[in-house]
Image 1: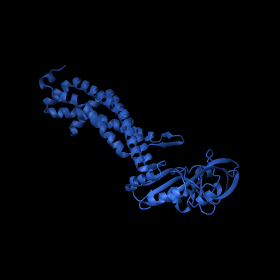
Image 2: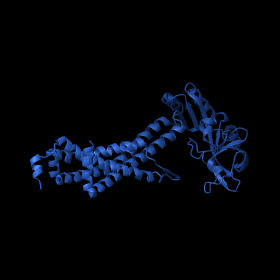
Image 3: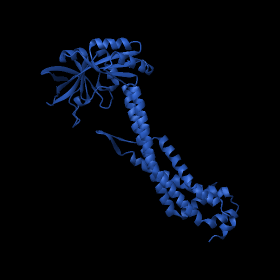
Image 4: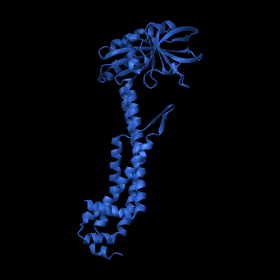
Length: 380
C-alpha cells in the first residue's frame, strides 16, 4: 500500500505543473459546491426556524370579526385548542422623547393571552404586560432606526395620538428586533383590548389566532371555521412550512447542480490529464508489469493518483472556505449573515468530489492496466 502511494506521488510530482492545475480545479469545484449547498441549506433552515417560532400548531383567521364572531370561533375551537386570541389593529402616531413623531401600529390584545403572540422570550427588555395603562413597544419605537440610540425604556411614559386626541401609556417592555410574530412587533405598540377600545372606539377584530393542542387538529378546525365564515381567510403555518421546505429544498438542489458543473469539468480535466499521463508512461507501466505488478495494481495506481489530487484539492478548498465564512451575504434588505458550511455538507461534498474524479480517472486507469506487457516495453 505504502509502495503504491509512493509511486503515485512520485508520478504526480514529475508532472507537477499539470498536478497543480488539477488541484486548483478540484479546490475551486469543492469550494463552489460546498458553499452553494451551505447557502441553500441556510435559507431553508432560517425559513423553517422562522415559521416554527410563529407556531406551526396555530391557525390565523383574517377578516373583520365582532365579539359575537369571536365567541363562535371559541365554541368551534374549544375541544381542540388551548387559546383563541382576538386581535384588534389600528394606525396611530407616537411622540418620542427626542421630539419626533412616528407612525405606529396599535394593537389590542387580551391581557391574559398576550403570551400567545408575544411570549416573554420575545422581550428585549421588561415584561409582556399590557394591563392598567401599560404597553409593550416595538424595538424601532424604543430605538432610533437610523442611529440605534435608545429613546424609551421600561417605565418611560409614552404619548400616542389617535383621532386627534392624546393618550399617555407607560412602557412595560420592548420586543426583540429578530423575534418573528404574526403581527408587526417592530413598529408597534401593544395594549390591552379594553384600553384599545377606549382609545379607538372600535369593537371589531381583524385577526383571530387559534392555538391548537396538536397539529393533527388543523384540518378539522380549519374546515369548521371556513364553514362558519366563508369570506374569512384561514392560514395554516403547517401547510406553509411544508411548501417552504419543498421550495428551499428545490433551491438547494438547483444551487448544487449549478455549482456541480465545475466538479464535472474538473473530472473531465482529470480524465484528459490521466489519459495523457498513461500514454506518456506506457513503458513505465511495462517495467512495473515486468517487476510483478498485476493489472489490477496498475489500475489502482492510476486511480490512487486521482484520489491524491482530489484530496489535496479538497484540503485547499477547505482552507478557502474559512475566509468565505466571514463574508456577509445580504439575503433581504437590512439582513446580512455569514454562512459557515456545516460539517455534513463539507464531508458529503468532499466524498462526491473524490468519487466523481475517481470515476473520471477510471477509463485511463483501466487502459493502463490492460496494456500488453511486450508492447508496453517496446513503446518509445
